Image 1 (cartoon, one colour):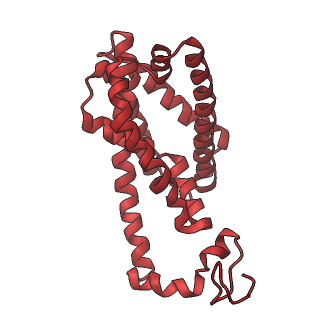
Image 2 (cartoon, one colour):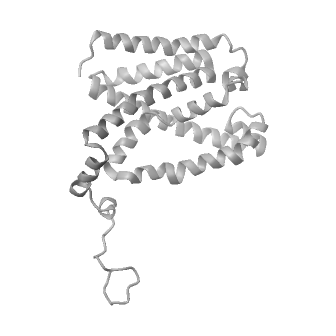
Image 3 (cartoon, one colour):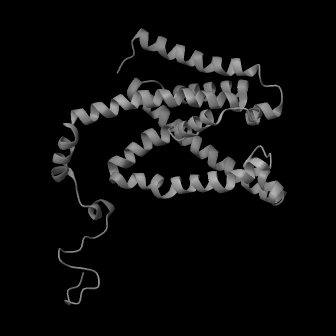
Length: 242
């Protein structure tokens, strides 16, 4: 795939727009509280969209698609069983304590609740996790650009890191939140038509259902667990070994 001049123009305009958000927000950043917590003035619906967009990064868009192709619907269990209950628990039970403490970060809250050693341990482990998580996202992005657009992998990673660094340095958390909202709408508007076209390409719901008997395999075969013979039940008294 080769990009035309108009494609590079659109990419350039997008990069300029993203950086301009940080530049415009910079005028409202006067203290460390403004930089780290946006002065606690960002509306709830904006922060909610930014939270959703933060979970629509390269790991989810690329990694979850690959896991879905390999393991099937079991990939979604990460959200249904793990992530969603955990987010609800944090939002309903933990956020009131966190917000009432006026802490600017989780390590700061742990220092207020426990001691400095707990804060240091959480800060170090969170920093290590963030480095690995961000590294995976940047690796997936660079690999995608290299395969699809034939860009240099190193240049793609450095370019994406530089853009995020600049707009975050300029506007702090506020700039990051508004850029996340922008990316949320771009991701939704970009992938919604793609999902519709994929369903249409397969012949709609009936077309997808018709393909399942030919291409699908039993769940146990996909997970690697041995399948029991038909008619054999766990705890059967017929004497058959299952």
